[in-house]
Length: 171
Image (cartoon, rainbow, N blue to C red; front, side, top):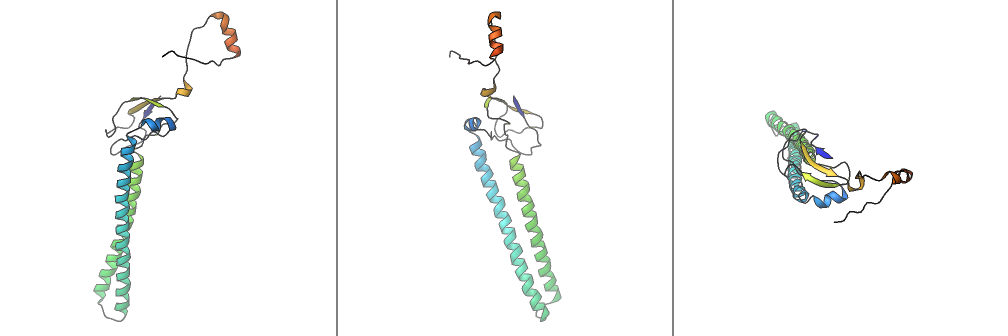
């Protein structure tokens, strides 16, 4: 079985083989998880900063609005406060959109096996750029191996009645 890149990836390939057996063998996934957490923390900090700026601009606008009613500030100052508030809201929405896009892009850097198995060949290195349709790994499921053997004709009827067999290999 081979794993092929099925989605467009902008960035670098990282490995996170999702199965009990293969996850233990994917040592490089720990490094990519740390990178993903750090990027996520930075993105969330940007969202929080944009939210705080939007809240501050809203408070300032509310103050100016009250002062404008009593004619303590000019119409121009009120308009500037409103523009600053609208800009801060737009920046907050943009930061949220960037965070969602970054999370989606981070998901594209993970390769998941469709079954629990063992990686038999890694055809690209972690961090290497990959293209759509490129084969990345070869994986096999040791519980689903098929073996072809030649047997004498006299045993064939017995095997047809009970097609299961235990195979033992001498190492």
